[in-house]
Image 1 (cartoon, one colour):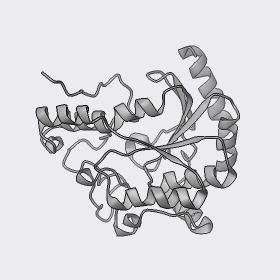
Image 2 (cartoon, helix red, strand yellow):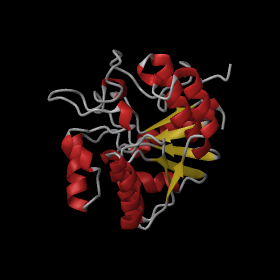
Image 3 (spheres, helix red, strand yellow):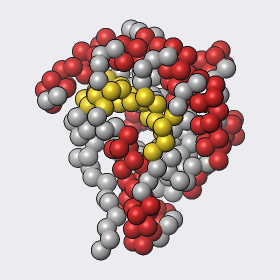
Image 4 (cartoon, one colour):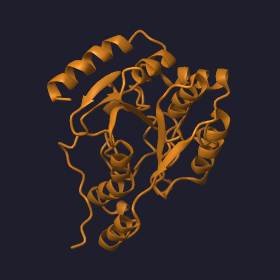
Length: 248
């Protein structure tokens, strides 16, 4: 798929997905051919997508990045979700050698010390496993929504990811949190109990806190950093590279 073809296909798909419901959006992508992969963090948005895939038996691979630093509630929810929908959620874990190299260079919890160190940790625990999860994929499905943060306000339904040479699908781009919660309630979707304790966005345990009243949904992620648009790198183009740990 060339960049030109990819951009053109993504734009046409973006327009087509706009007026469809969630299940139809997902089914349409699955029917386009090629491997479709949904990466779930087990957050409330992602649980909605998993519920649609499982309930409608849509041919989309469901995977998660089991970083080794997740909350126990998140790990438990993987098993519960598999059981409820009769699906398998493939787990992609970081390589121990990469973790050892990172710890030797920065310290196991060195991500608190600098943005560089935090990006490097996300690179080891998320980006490298993601690359393995997306091998051979034509479509990457995510739970990104426009209302999650200012950095995501212009999220399209479909976009060409030139770095990974695939089309990224964001089927909940136009859903707000109230619509998400209504879907969960109406369909008895299992969710992380931490959401009820003030954690709208849940990542690794050392890097996530509950938010305060009036804060954006993702304010609890990497809260010690000043950049309001902070991200782990999964949804940031490689034009702004994420440092990788070195054995040197």
